[in-house]
Length: 428
Ligand code: CMC
Image (cartoon, rainbow, N blue to C red; front, side):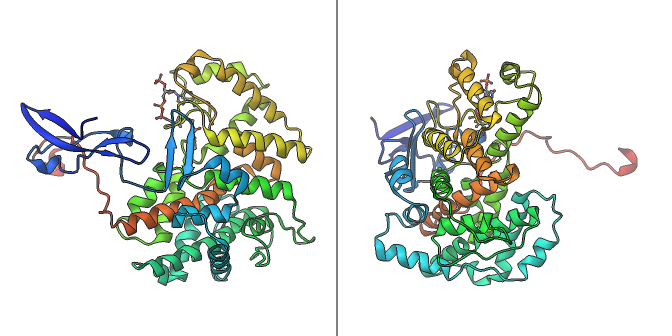
């Protein structure tokens, strides 16, 4: 392939380098386009054809259903790895050796507490508050309690901010849940592993000892690993763009949480379960909802189907589907909502509309079913997604800062009024 792309604008030719990634992905480097005397920009709403950065963190091939973190396949990581070593690999580039992992874990544990005054902020929220809003707010509030974490330039300062948020975030997640459930707030248990501690933070009841359930820990570990990064999606791009102004890590993460909240992104896992419940309440007629999803006059979409990048299958969905079957069987859960999910999946996979548009079940189609079996309320599903995505956001923020990327500042094509005169209010 040629190493130069030529663009002709009004008879004048401009040349731009062609960039190739390590997996042979190809891009036209248009950094010089506007400054090259062309004065022209590109227009790509939704960034469907636009790379915002070069990144060495996550590779995904939507056509072949490949997802790798730092070169390690998601299948290997989910089967052989755990969440903390996956987080380390994402953030620092390689799977850690024993000493590296021990140090990382102990640095995180040293930060696994939250200022008691944060409880006062939590107190101010009504119980009905959506836990994603609570989590975004508390993450932002952490800045005030850890001012050193904000203005970070050196790798050491970044490291301290990273272990601080990794230590404190699970506590905030559990507080968002426990507030809703009217349960006492807990600080977890340093003697436990990272994911075991998360389970205790979430599930411990005040009147009994917490008993670890290996099936739940395994499933939780897998779910967190599978959600840990997904290259330049909406929330990750948000984290990078907010961080590009040199806003600190916690501010960038808080913005990422808000971006993840939406039903077209992380909020889909909540939306899937709500959709399945609604279909059940409506008599379980999956065909009726398939027809609604295909009707262009109807805004209804089959939540948990389709993906901007995966146009064959979502490799995370494949792993989670198996995990969901195992968890439900092991916990002895029979769930009518699962039958509806299976029915919808069968119909969609053989339906022309879905096949033609390459709409397959995505990760969120199954994750909610597992969370529900674990006893996590529906509006906490996206919070669980955020907990898994945290290392990815951190890794992307760190990479952006270390590469000294410029502030994110897209351009636009203005389509408003041309210059017009100011008219006094009496004459309008
Ligand atoms: N149900 C019905 N039709 C759909 C769906 C769906 N779930 N998804 C896409 N389509 C149709 C869409 O109407 C369009 O049809 P047409 O070409 O006739 O206009 C075509 O498929 C392409 O859709 P699009 O909206 O242009 O595709 P996109 O790449 O912009 O959107 C998506 C991707 C994930 C936002 C979309 O598929 C969707 O809304 N899915 C449901 C929400 C969901 O499950 N989101 C979770 C994504 S995975 C977790 C994550 O990474 O955040």
